Length: 448
Figure 1 (cartoon, one colour):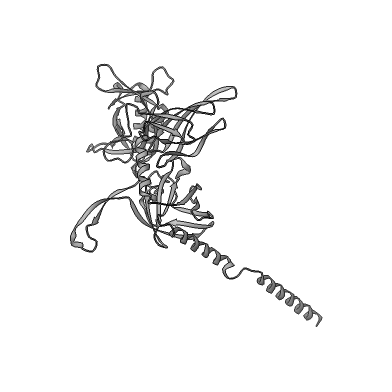
Figure 2 (cartoon, rainbow, N blue to C red):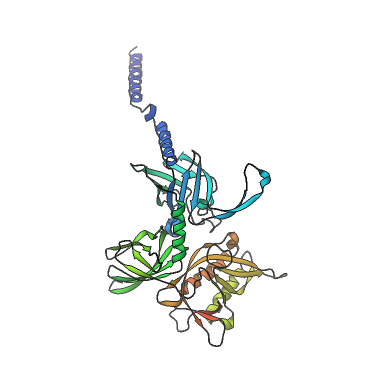
């Protein structure tokens, strides 16, 4: 009997403890799953409450490609209209949607509708789950196997400002911090202005910037959205030349660096372009720099480079021979012509380099192309110089020649910048490295 008494006492104590425990558990709107659902509703309502939508500076690939301005108008609890400073295309639409017999017309479309939804994974997650070119162009793996621009289409909602005008996001893939900012007016004008700024600044250089006691040289890679900056700094009783690409994004007045450049306690955060487009003023208003254009603008024009033995020095010729040997021994064997087209031509959206190949063996002499997007810029005070950086591959054709093209890019970028100069008694010019310290510069002939 005493044993049974202990058993009943213990059961009663546990029961009372359990009741006490559950009396302290949250309930109603405080219950965890209910609270998360309410957070989802609150954010959704805030997104749809903006008459003109929201702006977002999308920062792909940890900022290496700079930032891209997007606008987002959330029209329902599942639909969003997205536009970009970067993307538009010709599409066919009906003349009269209510009259199929009225025919069609072509328009240049810049706004694209996508779906979105919320989920709960590492917090409240906002996902754009149907393909929208202005946004998914930067997360599509077709552009740079396997990660493309490595951009985000899923974001963690970290917090909302008290005035509900800013929603703080973190990219699920990149981890980059970004913000949705409530728009006060139609964003189309702003996006148009950023395109105008890009058109005026791409491929340009600036007169030297004074920062922290240093003279900083700046060139603008307008498509890659990077500033090429050069300066010297003291290090272990020696002087070191610093050369780096710093990502930025366009504003309707100029550019802003994603991470400011700081030297000697002074910061450079960006600049605004003057109305006549001849100068820029730093954002602190303290310095005005001259905009410089080189003679050869490969963001618009193009050239054909020849690497044949009698049209290049031994180093350049051997480089191309190695490229050919790499491709001959690849899983997809081919032979490359000893030439390359560089710059921007035709309907290409971006500047590029194109190599021409044909099958090995070659029964029908059918050529095919291998293209990679590059960007080009001027060097201040050196009108004949051109500097080069890489952006990303063009489509998945790169996959079949990636080892060979990487070898080519490694050499071209290593020897950049180049000077393009006349050759006596020839209609073509010589493109020679000014970065190569050897007595005989790496050079090849170009038809430009």
